Length: 345
Image (cartoon, rainbow, N blue to C red; front, side, top):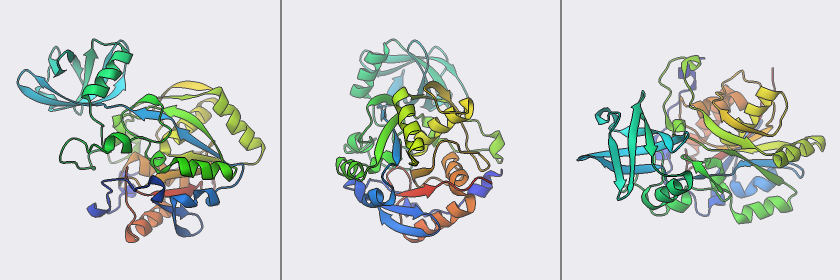
């Protein structure tokens, strides 16, 4: 498909710079036969007893680093771990870096440039084990906020907590599963009392999620791979829900991509861990997910393509036009919508 098919005009003032407080006070657009304005606290009434929420339990690491190569300043955003302390990263300015250069981030904390790729990507070698590196990142790194969230400093102090979900426990993501931002202990308690259960998958979201689609045809866009996992308890919970007539409700596109990756590759859901570079566009056959709670995404982005595939392109254009007209807040810290899967032709 043409990437231009997924374009729309979004006023800059609709881009949220801070989350709603409390988180479950955010607005929710229910996209069904009608477009209905609600709030996140309505969610227990919009779902049914026996439905299953599937969420992403990844935790964002402080993956943005500022350092020096000799006298030159360099900013680095880690986006994918490899083996033995190697990380792929995006660097600015990458053009001044060469293989063999050392970037110093703090006393005793440095990395060597092993190679350069396209689009500002580099490969770094840290001389730290994974646990020690995470500790160093926690001390010296910054939260990797997306570029459309503006700060006078690198991050607002509140972002350290705000840019995490209530259930993020597995460190490894360098971008958040933002649909999870709307959940609070109060909302989780209300969902449980309504008979709505929940279970977790993991997808360590990479910074590639921020990369613009630069091609004109979706078939030519390369996706960065990300590591994910589905455990046996989650598979059992989903199978039980199916047998009992409940619906699978994905909290965010990241959980959906894990579920649909495994369902597509194996034909059935099963325990799994590995890499996924799934790219979902209209025409994709969904096997695992019945409903999707997700934020409002960028025009021409792979995530808007995904929701268009899930609920229908024209329906999502109508929903986004409604959200813009009603002054919903967009992107990571913004409001959300609840989608039902379109009927498969």
